[in-house]
Image 1 (cartoon, rainbow, N blue to C red):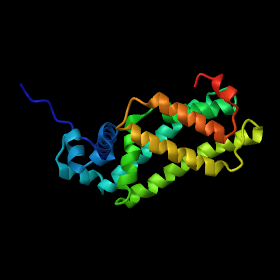
Image 2 (cartoon, rainbow, N blue to C red; image 1 turned 180 degrees about the vertical axis):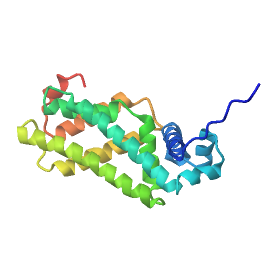
Image 3 (cartoon, one colour; image 1 turned 90 degrees about the vertical axis):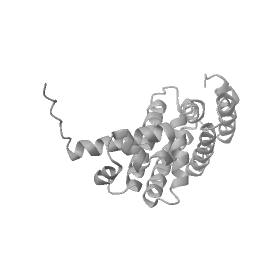
Length: 208
């Protein structure tokens, strides 16, 4: 019996494998676990071959973070845009997505991102870019609601930065402190609704 001919993969295929492996590791164990050896073990190649297809691990980590962060924002944006009840309902869905339905895998990626960016300039630049994208998305929602008279947000960007920063911190806690999602969601929704001067009855009549 002859052995099956081994198929040689193209550089593009190998790069895709390396990227996919790094992404999987990041979602399973955080960005800090994306090391040259870990990626090599996942792909099934020698560690030296990883840097043959990726010039620097710092760039790979930054690319993986960008992809995960952008997919998270797109998912939340889709949920918010699907709401037909108005700006108040959209805000409540936003807060539910950020707090109640914890994405612990993505939260751990963000948590590691803030820490590792102190020593990874490429990651730091990407992290700031993605954080600003979140702030702009939330600020736009606040601005539209304020213009429509649904609630009060005269400084939408400042309030968006506060909300994103607060929920980032709570999401980071969720990575290691589970079991308090509903309680935390209640406090966040109550606090942000008060800041926006959303009537309590408007909050209570929703299922969020």
